[in-house]
Length: 244
Image (cartoon, rainbow, N blue to C red; front, side, top):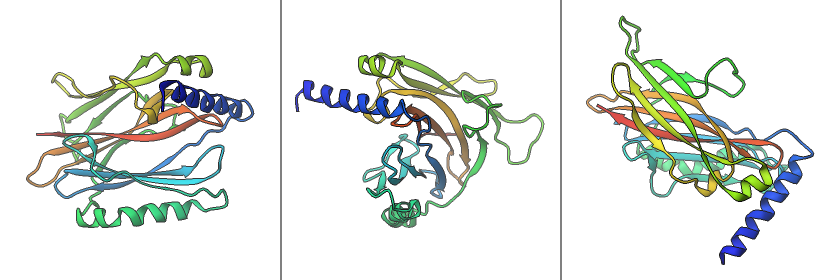
């Protein structure tokens, strides 16, 4: 397919998207379920699910991430998308769990870890771009404090600017143990197609897993808000890191 054809396809999609947005304000706000870590902390999994705006079709995805490389493992994510507005969300979630069942079972991905922070979009009192947590299971003095900070970056995309009125956004995520210099966990150098015309980001959840004899693992779920058919859609991505 030529570049011109691809550009026209994207152009038409954005035009249709904004036309729908003019008549409605509610977007597709995906939910998430933490599926857990493998015993050694090398893998982390979560599910996102919801009803697609515009079509009303239910969907579910399960992501399994190599925590050392911070990337999906081969053969994932698992996806279920039911092209029937009368279908139940529970059916899509059941289908995707059937796909992931063998991998989750054989790799024993069921250790919940500990939820250190959670910031749902409805909570407006918290800072979605900065989270400070105490990683000690039992608070002691002095606490072991870690700061996770997200900074948005602007990427020019003429299509997004012309039809959405906004530049697309990427982000940088840093992690810092109190008293030490910050470490960059993720930095966008370009925007993948799945996040085209992203509007903004926020830290959704911070989890930790301390495997016996292994490295401590952090998993940070990021809310991604992007232009949708009926308003801003929310999806999730995970950033992971192993630390001594």
